[in-house]
Length: 173
Image (tube, rainbow, N blue to C red; front, side, top):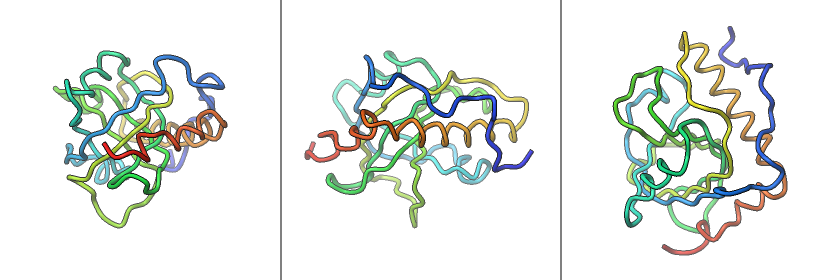
């Protein structure tokens, strides 16, 4: 299987035409170093998020949301800077047998360097699919590449595209 292949059996647009409760979900935090697999093993760099919101917004998100893959928008650094599409894995990552839940955000943009320690704001717009285990690394990479394409296509719809202008991206917190 080519590492550029996507799964032809999956739809490329998911979610209703407009976000329905509990979406959109806004979370802000700090990018921290994760397991180091995103760039090295998968060729898909991710930033792990630690929330700096009161009562740990990530724990609330873990409580509200099923484990799985989500799509939305993300911003790194200061407010009023570029907002990029993102895919987020929320959960245990069973292929790697994680012992701790994590929120791993893959921003669909190539950055010149790492941004550990930077602030991050995300809008979770909708759900793509449940978390699952994979028989091989190639199968996992294929599904991640499909998730990325699903996010790109799903975010083109007006109600989802409008979320990139949410106040979380423009207001100092």
